[in-house]
Amino acid sequence: MSKIDILIGAQWGDEGKGKWVDYLCPDFSVIARFQGGNNAGHTIYVDGEKQVLHLLPSGVFHDKLCVLLSGVVIDPIQLLAEIDAIRKTHGFTDANLIVSEKAHAITPFHVAKDISNEKKSNKIGTTKKGIGPSYGSKVSRTGLSMVHYIDKTKREAWIKEMIKSDPAFQQNYEEDKADWQKFIEAADQVKVYVKNAEAILRKKTKAGASLLLEGAQGALLDINHGTYPYVTSSSTIAAGACASLGIDPRKLNKICGVAKAYATRVGEGPFPTELFDSIGDMIREKGQEYGATTKRKRRCGWFDGLAFKYAVDLNGFDGVYLNKVDILGGMESIKLCTHYEHPILGVLHDFPSSADTLSECVPSYETLPGWDSDLSKCKTKKSLPKTLLNYVERIEELGGAKVLAVGTGPGPSDFINL
Ligand code: IMP
Image 1 (tube, rainbow, N blue to C red):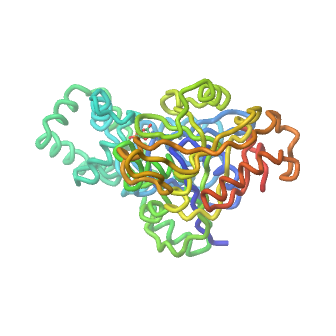
Image 2: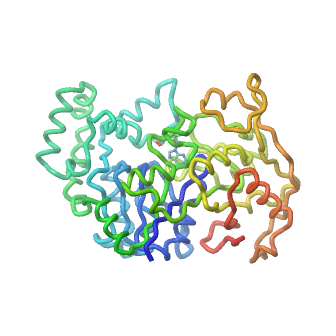
């Protein structure tokens, strides 16, 4: 039956979305990514083996049609590397992938610019993959769309114009010859995938195909609504998915979120519930909170109920998958942030619109009893510890969204439906 669902990260990314895309995949014929690029890191376990994807949707492991929509930025070298790896291990064929003609290319210039920006004192803590500069070019109408990238004449004209108009580009083009060579050579291999993706999907869904729109990063990194400027450069929320695909938002079926039972963040930017003590270290080690893309240590903290409510409001979640409840197991008590205190504004129950205000907020917590470290014997909701269910209930109350299931381990079947 035709349906269009969306899955979104409800925090600062790294919520474990890959696991749920993987779980939901059998119900869909098409899986599409609508924003971001190879800054993402989707870790999933396929046949017991850890797999990390940066650009391709997780649906590639299920022999589904996978699509990179107009709002995605594409590093062609990374794209070909992922296709190569999947082709060898999971029987990927060219018919499995469509790349939007309207998506924009990440060129060697964009990567170099990202790396150089990150050397400045006002760095964002990006993944240095060229994401922001590529979106920057797109928005300032000097970018290289995929349909132009694969067309030799258009691509050469674009390069010529950029050399003429931007001395920094000219310098990069002359100094980074090897990377430019690889970038240009990749175009012929990428060509086969580049199509009018959005029109194809609109037609398919009208004819009954079911589509899952897979988010990358998380709601709090959204370019419009996140903790600007410490955000990614795309719209990570459900409305961004509609814009990237170009559909009537009323055609959506379900919008679901993915959160972790605690919070993490990578890169710079305010994070009120961040822990700087041994509990934060324990969460990082036990939860293996290291970046899948950059290997950076993730900053860890308590679950932020106020930020979660904001993410629920931004997306209208029909339900949320709550990952990694096992990581908090074995603690006597667990803190849950219910609201903030601000030195001038007083008690805040709404997420501040400015990152400056957010950085001045002090989280107010309620303390809840913890649960046993071993959840391996729990197979049903009834068998879960009462204290864990109590914690989940408080999260539901604070956020105003139902928790659909809890993740109890890294494996694909390590979860319990609620
Ligand atoms: P960019 O997306 O590489 O430009 O980085 C901008 C911000 O988003 C930085 O704080 C990154 O750490 C963060 N970010 C980008 N991708 C991810 C992700 O997949 N998970 C978590 N944070 C991310």
